Length: 152
Image (tube, rainbow, N blue to C red; front, side):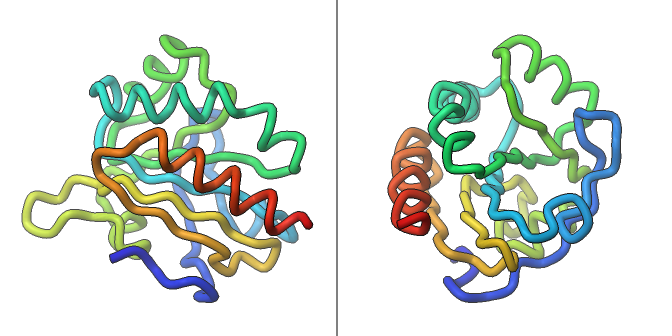
């Protein structure tokens, strides 16, 4: 089950495709954002989800909501995935699965990330969470809807 609405999001400190260490607390201070977890680069569902976020990127940018994707893949894999699909947002590498676990986005026993998307407010409390392993496009639709509601 995804973390509940109103809960303070756990800190994230991971390597990013920007070449920097991304820190939710430091880099997104006072900023709403979307954090989405996905199982694996280059798989059909994850590619569809990433490309859907890419295609809706201007809507999120107009709402001043940055997007960050997280999986257990390496930065090397993320860079190839980002380039292959022209992704305009950063991907973060969580090889240990520690951040995925903190966000309740890790499948027990097999250790792959679940498909979970969080909308965080400017205080990094969870405004909305959506979890569906197979409905990649619905994650984007739900986040657009919730982002627009939050900005009204």
